[in-house]
Amino acid sequence: MAVALHGNLKDFGIAEVFQLIGQQRKTGLLEIKGDGQKVQLAFDGGSVVWASPVGKSEFSVLGDRLVRCGLVTRARLDELVREGESSARPLPSLLISSGALCSEDLEQITDLLARETIFEVMRWSGGSFHSSAQTIHHDVSPERLLAAEQILMDGLRMLDEWHTFADKVPSDDTIFRRTG
Image (cartoon, rainbow, N blue to C red; front, side, top):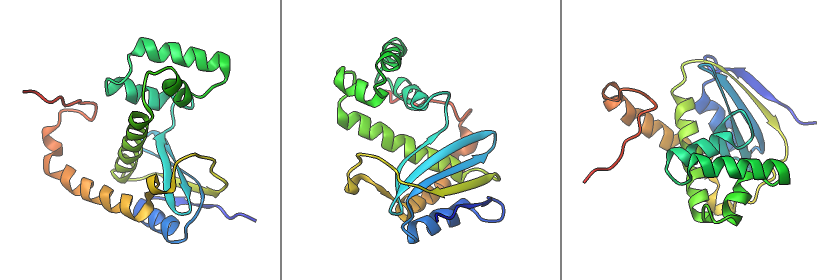
């Protein structure tokens, strides 16, 4: 019988939840609610397979991120979403098979999405979590999985760095572009 872990982030912080999942090498889904948002993280053997805010549909957040990063136009994304709905093929598969993205770009953007999601959750001051043991089906190679302890340390480092310039950023939605 699988046991679920759930609680309040004020009583049991997200860093402690990550440590427990990592040390116990747990596999399953962690859902975190807070600050009016909901995110999900999938773990396999204590390592993060993927992490993402929960959107309107399964791949809506990934699609928005691809557009935001300039890798796909909104019009092309909408075409692929419609094609996916009619063919029941997942968006990542369609992005690669259509030539809209190469697999390396898709891997990089899903890794970025996972890291940003975890960083965002670490900034939450409250909320709740629910972890359930279940099989996570994925095709991520073991060397690409993000060890919970490592991503936790990266997130804490990023959080420390964020505090040094957060007051200079006008909005969390600000996109910086390299000039010159």
